[in-house]
Image (cartoon, rainbow, N blue to C red; front, side, top):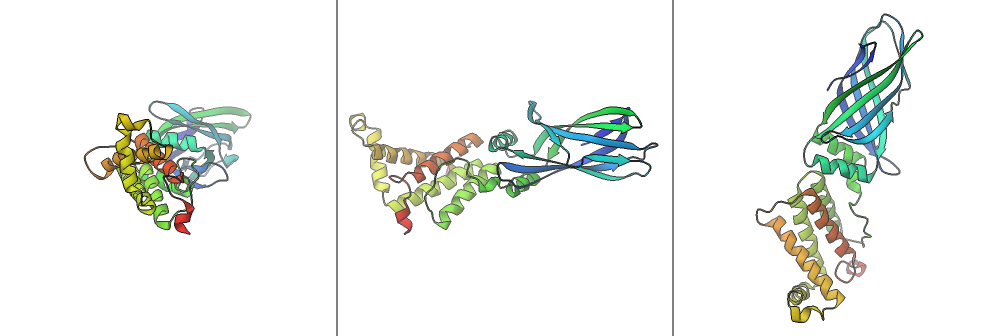
Length: 279
């Protein structure tokens, strides 16, 4: 990556490194995009200000953030060349991060960036613009997601009951597998969750019988709501079976759907976990 701030087509600063980091925010996820490079010696004093960065998804091009102001308001240069870095901090919503993850899949994150600035030398005020495509390594992006708190947020806003530490660990692992692109492993973790539900409720037999009734036209109409939910849970377990056995592959959206349905059923007290199981 090479992107520059120029004046009269003459390069003042050239950036060749792009780093992203994350941190917790009160709402959404805070990310700092840092550009590092070198500044050139200038024959006359130059001031650089109003620096901003825009981010877009590369292929196809879709705008992500229109303008992120630099944390440094003014830069002043004269004779001596030196290293330089600029920081741009913004907060992305859960929808924006999920959109990035849907686009990234399990690969590196590719973005298009645009750098704008104003330069002033004497009484000459000029605008600078440059654009480049960048690649954020997968591991660096995953670290930024983690420190921004993305892994600490459930993918679906479903109220969950009190659960055991073991179940909480399985849920965390299932979400982490989605973030790292191991979608089949997410589905397999969901099967482990359903099996724990069956064990704690001791209703595996009832679930199987309800599913048989659901496939019998003569009995289906007389099924109660609980029986229908038990049948739904059994069908979901059958889907999850593909995560543990066979050659079936799952997409990111499918893995999210399976995890979402598992969490919703787990939160429903008639077919999922209830607080009394842990008291």
